[in-house]
Length: 93
Image 1 (cartoon, rainbow, N blue to C red):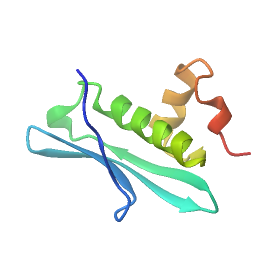
Image 2 (cartoon, rainbow, N blue to C red):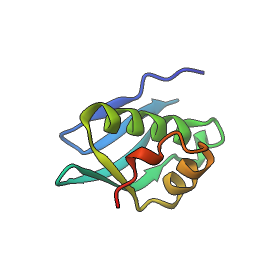
Image 3 (cartoon, rainbow, N blue to C red):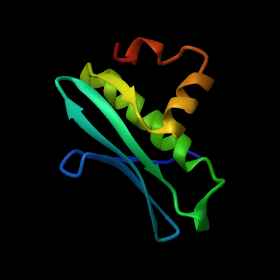
Image 4 (cartoon, rainbow, N blue to C red):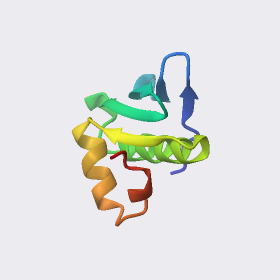
């Protein structure tokens, strides 16, 4: 399923509404580094690949903006490792 994840810069989050449930990836932006702090998908809509879609949308936005990424969120850190180097160029030192 392809989701049109929304970037909400005012709230510093990527978001998707699934069956009335708000799913989010929250971040902070510091000197061109997107620090991913939290990914949240309610249990009622879990297991549908939403968190992965949120992570992918965030990585694509970071690349477009020229940002580096620091994944403090354990889900996003593990997701990035599973992408076989596709986003390694985005990792902040």
